[in-house]
Amino acid sequence: MRRVKSILELKTYDEVLAGFSWQRLWALFDGSEARMNLAHECIDRHRDKGTAISVKFADGRCEHYSFAQLADQTGRFAHWLARRGVEKGDRVAVIVEPSLGFYVGMFGAMKRGAIAVPMFTLFGPEGLALRVNDCKPKLILVQVDPAPMRAQFPDAQIVRVDEAFWAELQQEKNEFSWQTKSNDLALFQYTSGTTRELPDAVQHTHRSVVTLIVAALYGLGLRPGDRYFCPSSPAWGHGLAHGTLSPLALGISTASYSGKFDAARIFEALQEFGIDTMAAAPTVFRMMRNSGMKAGSLKKISYAGEPMDAATMSWIEQTFGVVPASMYGTTEVGVAIVNYPGLDGYRIKPGSLGKPVPGARMAILDADGAELPPKQSGEISLKRKSGWVPLKDRGYRDEEGYFYIEGRSDDVIISAGWTMSAVEIENTLLKHPAVLEAAVVAAPDALRGQVAKAYIVAKGGADDVAGDIQLFMKAQLSKHEYPRLVEFVAELPKTPAGKVNRKVLRERSK
View 1 (cartoon, rainbow, N blue to C red):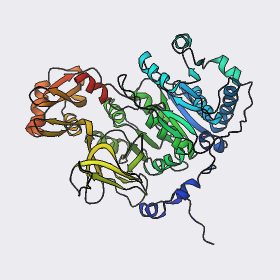
View 2: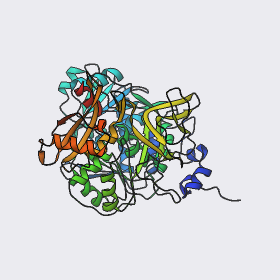
View 3: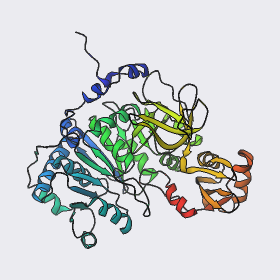
View 4: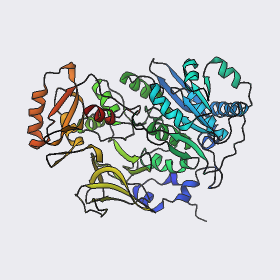
């Protein structure tokens, strides 16, 4: 009888398209469609595989946590939660930098059957209160003095991850019998939002880990044996789903970064951890390029969250010897378009998002919801059973089926009747020799309705080149596309994933 290949053994693009099935995907896991636990799938079943997570800290030190260590400590934490009255479905917020405490808190809560809610440590009181008051956690893990938070959130147990905490955990049993169904909630994930408008928490069930593997295999190109690094914070979408859950679910060692971004530390991590596969936001790669440092080769690089400018893409190819692969999707629907890194028979087109993931149908729709032919701009949309789902990005596809993005729907600037792409303006700005970083948003204008406003970080801190930049832009793009407003800033606001936070800039420009 002929053996059916595992989905991990499909090595060419054609094989993947012909051989992909959800049944094959489910076969990678211990759980079933009825009963599953995300912590077990990511940690416990790989306990004999050595290092699970390596962390590079901003102060230069490194820590390594094995699958066995995490399995034992998350089991103890689950028992500890039960002793403190945390029941199935209760929320456990984890406000801790990437470290042993973060991973034990998050996975241990899910093992218990509680809902883990990772949160960014640098939230101010208002941003934190919005999220805590929304999810109402029964217990909050912190890494700082818990007294102020106890006063702010008197209904929650606030526990600091310190020596006393670890001593308590050591008194608990390391084995815990999880009792969760596949459709039970496992994680709440808050998108970036603003303090004026908090998005609803994206709710993930235990079975959501199965869907994540589509992105892991075809967006990141992960396979057993890879040494993987994602410096995005695991408290946010990219670092959580694609930097933590995806690789661990495949039993692949992953590395993360903790603390204020430092390009030198990123290069150190690549060397110290023997990294061969990396994923990050384009801004992270731009900051690495601007540092002037160099590194050895990688075999797979992927990026997500925003388009990558041509100069950074060229630098990656020259520095690491690999063409970077875009990965595109949303927090709500997951990854939908990928560039299949590492697969034979697939050609990456620089500048494109790639092609749909196996089994997905994508299209460009006009304002009336009708499908558009190649080379026509419209809304990038995904077909679901309920109909077409617009992904709130504008773009087009070419004759070969590759998709391209022109910017968020709310990043399209309409000035005096002209439609402009903020992404195109930004990429052109980055070609000017005085521009280190740039972000473009729409600003209100009494005459034109909107104008393009550029926020620029200048090289060497120079801020007297606005006129020269505008002349350069007029020569490079259509006359109406240059940024009529220019503001120089010391740095651009960024999300923990390393993306430019355009929401902040749009609020600032109103």
